Image 1: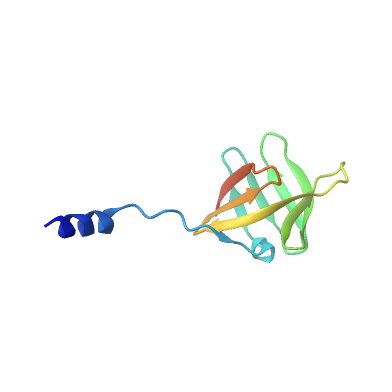
Image 2: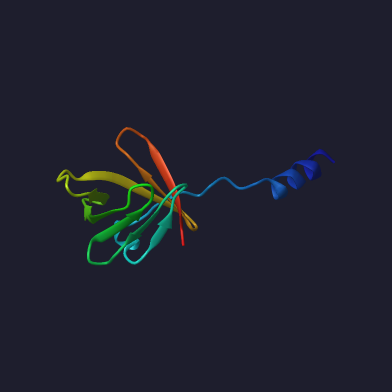
Length: 103
C-alpha cells in the first residue's frame, strides 16, 4: 500500500524546470518578452529593445556567451544563455538572472 501511494505522488508531482544551455545563434530571428520590455534579435547582429527607454544595439556570440553593446556606449556585456521550452534566461557573471518568454 505504501508503495502505491508513493508512486501516485511521483506521477502527479510538478516536474522541475529543465534548463539547458542555449546556443547563442538560436537567438537569431527571435523576439523575447521580458516583464517590462520586448527585445528582438536580428540574424545580422542588430537588436532592438523596446521598454521604458527604447534602444538599438548589437549582439554577438563571443566564446559561447551572448554579448551585447548599446550605443552610445562601446563596452560589450556578456551573459550565459539557458532555455526551458519557450522561456530563456540570461545569466550575468555575478549570477543575476533575467528571464523572458520567446514570442
